[in-house]
Length: 137
Figure 1 (cartoon, helix red, strand yellow):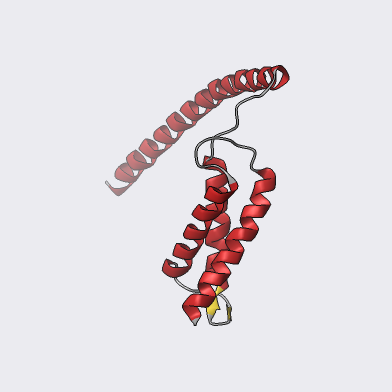
Figure 2: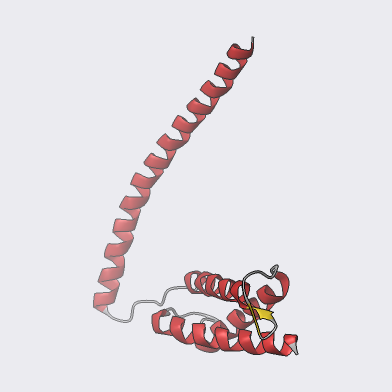
């Protein structure tokens, strides 16, 4: 009985989240339609409900908190891993090219910032190690 309830709950939750995400999912490509999104989300939700350690309140013999968390994060993962749809007209193409140019500029600034942050962390770690060795001598 518990397994059937868990399957039904996973099915309803996956269908609900698929409908919600379909309003925001404007990406096209292989296996990105509603059916494939629902199928993958249902399987992720069911597997997560089976394998994640139960916690939270129990209703109808199942722990629903881990199933909801797995379904939500699985849906987000599927949504953001789907390819974006290609532009369909001239305005969308121009907008896409402008976004790509801004993204390139942002990547350059991000690379410099992360590189600087990396070297600051390396210097701080080496300083902490050296300070520890000199302090224990």
